Length: 533
Image (cartoon, rainbow, N blue to C red; front, top):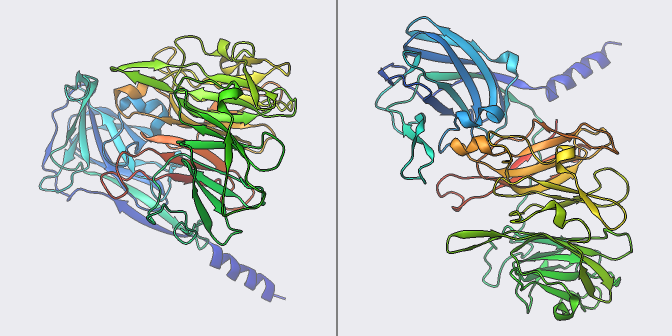
């Protein structure tokens, strides 16, 4: 009768977690010098646990000064290149503890009450603000690859547009150490196998594409998903590989929709500045060795002399056909940026469209001189069966939420719902929106919002929103969005999308980053997967 409990105990041991206590530090153990305390300047050190862990304690050796010292544990915003600054404290602080320093020596600070958990690719930053005659940290000497910094938040930087704030690398690494509990489980995280080459998603020379604009759909109506990258289409050969076709028309990207009811997907080819194309798909159903289109742009009525960024097909007026919303970006001439109004085109049938930007109320939500808009997305935010539009805006502009009035018009409702973003140090300044998506993250029956915002770790950080999940705390009929933790602040955060990546029935998040360098060159800026526990 005792066998079953014994077996059950063995199973628990097999799937349980194994914890290891570790100390993360860079110093050589010898206090060699200290910085001169300067009011409001920062001392920071970037530490890398290199594994999922919980922060238990931080140990700091103080070299000089006495009195209260506020120590912050913050997120690494720039992939270890520079630390974040005090201008990001409001949204990048993981723990904040006050220490009473009475003289030189070690201080140990308990972090367990803050329950700070780090993912496997997260670094962490320990920071404090100096003050005149206040406590300063000891640093070692003779080390290579120092990851400790001093930051002057006041002096304009002559090498960077005279924006206040200059980073200095410290003379040595600070004697600052983290005690962490590294937790490992036998259940590994989900993994993906790279089959790009195997499935022949390569160019004519066999090289991979470099593109951040990709679309997926059943282009030839054979019930297999196809891929388009720029003006190259890869038709799915029933899961055995993809057949590459270079289209006769140019495109930086293509958005697809069945506009004539024949099941294959027609194309809106993005080129921008009056050069977008509308094309009828005339490929025979199921054919994979050819693909053909007829260009109907000139008679369609779709005229958009602007930098097209995010076109979206949807039936806003419930008349049974697809209408077109276009989020437009910016154009720069002689160093002067010009912004362009977003557009809504109503589908009148027979490949004819009418510009209803003014009549629909979209224009009222984006007054001149307009916004630099990027990550537009569609949702039914109030669950009334009618599609609404969200537009993430760049250049610190307020995000826009257009709620469908079910009569051919929209009401801009970002301020009323909180989807506009969170307030910053400058009234009217919000974020650098790069992407957005919608899902019921907390499984409470209403839709929540994720916004990917590029940010800055320096003085500009006080004026901009980080990437964030905006949790819907209102009712289905009256949504109300509030910032919710869950997404790490990173300087180069960009587009994002929801999905259940590990098939556990919970919504997960993919968040990409912009990088100006190839992987392995300079600071790597990998995308992040956030798995919901």
